[in-house]
Length: 551
Image (tube, rainbow, N blue to C red):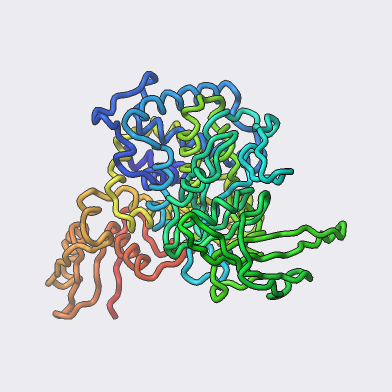
């Protein structure tokens, strides 16, 4: 019965099945169970883990709606979800501080085995440095560093508030553009916040070997004075007050970018202990191609010149990093994905949306890696997946209750990665006519591919616990002549592999359908870059027995 139900969902809404598995993959088990250990339902009769996952699904649909500017959730539904999220925050805040931030950090680490590195987006000159972008594009005016008559001025601008957003604590997302994952949420409050306190929160997240691009109106004085000397690097622009520094050399031209010279000067910034770390001050005048005007761009960095030269630093600092992501960050930054919520619950709301961003981005990466999609199909893939998840997830959880999904909490990364790859082939935004035209896939091949995917989804727990996920069972040798008693050999093939002999010489191997699927999976595990639909024609239908000629 479970196989029949799962088959229907894999065939008609594989993105809902994939979403459930990847969401469980992105969360630690303790994040899915009640902190008191009883997992009692809330007032709506929904356990904690299901409430969190259902909100993550809702956030994915909101992210897709932002990307394609389609119809978003109706206000009544947002009001209900906002009340549920506030109640969830009140329930969890007593036992887990900054739970929303922990959800994001955990998901970024747990999704690494399935996240696909986008090598075409990476600068080859960065070497082993991990790029982290602190996104401050959506910062409120009260948080931005802006020039004034007497230095940096903070202005609280009510017009900067997004419709439906909350007035209170906010977060700034930190993402890895190569993996397209949000790795952290840096909290800040709307209005006047001391720059040094904000910088102190920032440096707590910095790790050696990372290159941080501070994309926003940040105060460079606080960044330069508080940045740790542990091998981590940063690039920040001057947007407001200029930090107090002393020149350690003359400004010299170090190259040209877009027809304008790039100049560099070494500077030192005094600190409280009297030391003066050396930084690079890079200046470039951006030329507006339309109006012919120039814009002065000043960049401060501690990246050594041997690692990146001045034009490369300018390219990193002025790049539109948000455009490199497959999904928009607006829903994470403005806090409006769940409608009107209490200020105290805003960090949790942003954490759930960021979790949904990571899950959605990882799913998109798996599908794109499995399918050869053109630019148009890649563009419509997020909306296609979100529509399928929104339409089928609720019904799927009714047909397949949560207890049926707990078995996947114990799967190793390799097993889940294989399941995601198989499901990705079914998540195809193209029409059936185009799929058959592009891949020449017959209905029989599609059925065989579906059967293979189900075998990966519905394996027994004992088999999953084995060291080899696709390990074959012990071979049983048939010593009789195949022509004298073929029925007995066929009966044995349903229990174990049977080596058929003739005149005491092996002539064939009888393999049951289950063992054949395991064999195919083992081959794909060792040499498998992309699951091909055409390869499904090699997989037999359920109930068939394959005879492999050893000659």
